Length: 170
Image 1: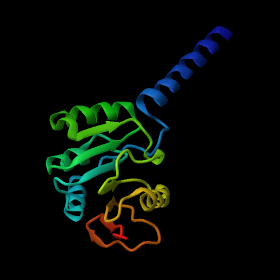
Image 2: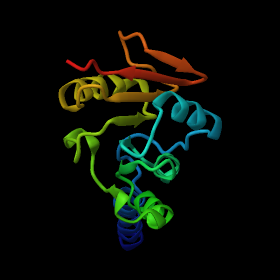
Image 3: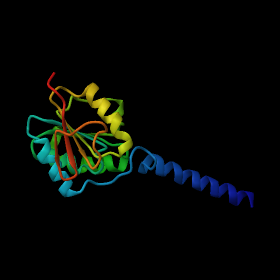
């Protein structure tokens, strides 16, 4: 009886560790892919071009990064789930050194000063994203959010479920 219970606890513990560290369960926001029409709206608002550095906060499967890189931008994705990091890197391989995905929490700081930040995060994360953008975003940068606007801020433009915010030049 005790051995059966001990074996069960070991198996459950191993499954919990696997789910946490290899699949990413319980780390960051849940994975929810952005809808194609919402991504199209966000890309129109952001006006992404070859001179841009685009950062995707919680890049998931890399769909946003691929779309931005296809427009000529240099892209960086932040993702905590190691399986999604691998999928993103695979999807971005054709863009070479213009695209990278890091397994890192974006709240630790941006790797480059992005001109465009893309965020499809939950409401509770938006105040922290706004603060980080104000602190680390370069003047004139754009923040595009999908589905969840920044609290206490009026967007500069809206299209569908996408919201655009511009950081003043000074």
